[in-house]
Amino acid sequence: MSLVLRDAVDQDLPEITALYAREVEGGTATFETEAPGLPEIRHRFEAVQGHALPWLVAVIDGRFAGYAYASPFRPRPAYRYGVEVSIYVEEDARRRGVGRALLQALIERSRDRGMRHLIGAISDSDTSAASIALHRSLGFAQAGVYRQVGWKFGRWLDVTLMQLDLDPEGAAPKSQGLNLGGGLA
Image 1 (spheres, rainbow, N blue to C red):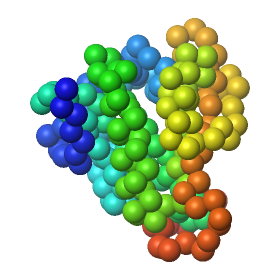
Image 2 (cartoon, one colour):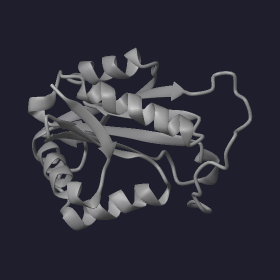
Image 3 (cartoon, rainbow, N blue to C red):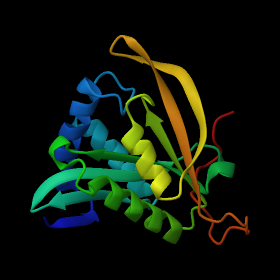
């Protein structure tokens, strides 16, 4: 097996859109209930690029296997050193190290970008034990659980919050962080 990680490019967006649509329509990793089309995914991709944050693609033996990205955690300026990580892996590529490789790369790229915190919001805590274990194995700690905050497929779903602190000593920031503007009132 040959696993390659690389920066996502515009030509990857149709496969990214298709994978995300399958998760929207049949999974609980997202609380969206209608799959966004290619124009919306392109808008999201460009927004991540606009913050100079990583959006990565995994390829196994030349075939698209998944993607991951970091996005601003919250829109207000004081949150500019935190990002939320999102990972989606094709079903036939699961349990082959793709998610781990993508998450490790997001951690390193976020560290290089001067981020302080990475947040994982893992939906459907009851069936996401593997995702929670993956995050924990890479240093994330559980920061809390939102209980029954999403209604999908006729049932209530929890969200487990996992957090990785890249500087537990709490040193002053070494970068300007993300430009988030003034935020919401």
